[in-house]
Image (cartoon, rainbow, N blue to C red; front, side):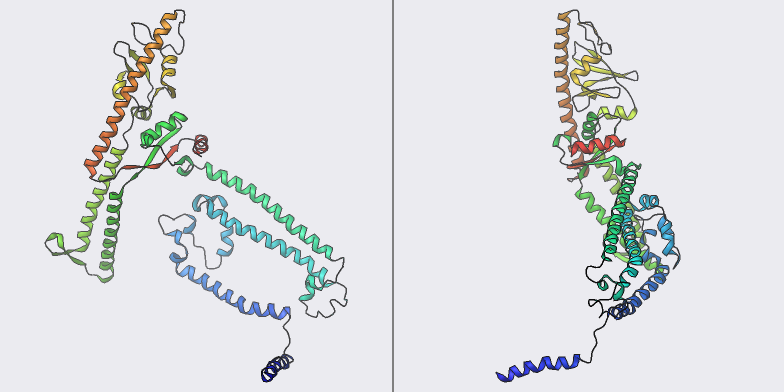
Length: 467
C-alpha cells in the first residue's frame, strides 16, 4: 500500500520536473500557428477549386447542362479567378427569376452575415488603440504579448475605457437592427415580385379533401366558378389514380436506358450491339433497331392511354363548353311541356340534354341560383312563352303572381330531376367506358386537385377560402 502511494507521488513530481523546461504559448504563437496550418490548407483547396471548376464545368456547374435545372445565368462560367468579383454584379431580379426565391434568400443570408462581419472589423479598428493604451497596473503588468494588449483583457478593472466597449456593442447591435429592417423591406419587395410574376405557380391553388360529389375536373371547376365568376377560373384538374399507366411508364424508362446504352456501345466500340429476342423466335437482332421499335410502340400506347383516361375522366359540362366558346345564354320556356330551353347564337338548346350538372343557370357572365335567376330574368305568363324583361314585371294581378311562382316551382322540380338523371348517366357511362378502354383501375379520382385562376386577386381569395 505504501509502495503504491510512493508511485503516485512520483508521477506529479516527474511531470513537474518536465514542465519546468516548457513555456506556455501566448496568443500570438497560437494564432500564428493556426494561420500557418489552416490558412495554407485553405489556400491550396481554394486554388484547386479554381482550377477544377474550369477543367470540369459539368461537375461544378450542374445548372448549365441539366435540362430541368438549366438557366441562362449558369451558362456563363467566368474565369478561374475573376468569378470572385463578377458574381457580385448579378442582379437580384435575375437570380430570382432564373434560380428561384429560395436561392436568392440563401445568398442574401450570406450577404447579411458579411455586413455584420464588416461592422465587427470596423469596431476593431478603433477599439484596439483604446485597449492597448490602457494604464499599466498590477492587473495587466504581467501581459507582455503584443496581441493580448490589443484585447479587452488588457484593460484594468473600473477603467473608463470600458465605455468604448459599451459604445461598440451599441454600434454592433444597432447596425444589425438596421440591416434587419432593410432586409425586411427587401424581402417584401422581392416576395411581391415573385408572387406577381405571370407564372402558373402563382395562379394555381392546391385543393385537398375534395368531397366525393366534386371529384371530377368539370364539377370542381363549376364549384369555384360559382364561388367567384366564370371568367375568374381558368381550369381545374382532379388528380387520378393511374397505377397501370405508371407501371407502363417505368417500363418505358427502362427501355430508354437500354437504347441509350446500346447507342453508347456503338459509338465507343464501333460495333453494333445485338441480343437474342425471345419474342421473335429467339433470333439475334440489332439492339438499337429493336429497342427503337419497342420504344415507338410504347410511346404510342402511353399517349393513347393518357388520352383515353383524360376523355373518360373529364366529361365536360354544357356550361363549361359554352364558356369556353365565349357564348351567352338567353332562356325561353314552354309551360305546357315544363321544359327549359335556351338560345345560343341563334341555335336553340334543350335543358333536358344540355343543362350543367349543378343547380345554377348561366346568364352572361354571372351565376344565379335557379329560382332567383328565373324570377329575375324571366316573366312567365299563363299561356305564352317566357319573355326576358331584365328583372322588371307587372305585379298588379296577385293571382298571376302566385301562378307564376307555382309554375317556377314545377319547372325547378322537372329540371332538377332531369339533371339528376343526366348526372347519373354521365358518371356511369364515364366509368364503364374507362373500364372497357383501359381494362384497369386507371382514372379513379383522388381527393385532391389543382385549380388555376385568371387573376391574382381571385387566387388569394381562393387560398383564404380553402384554408
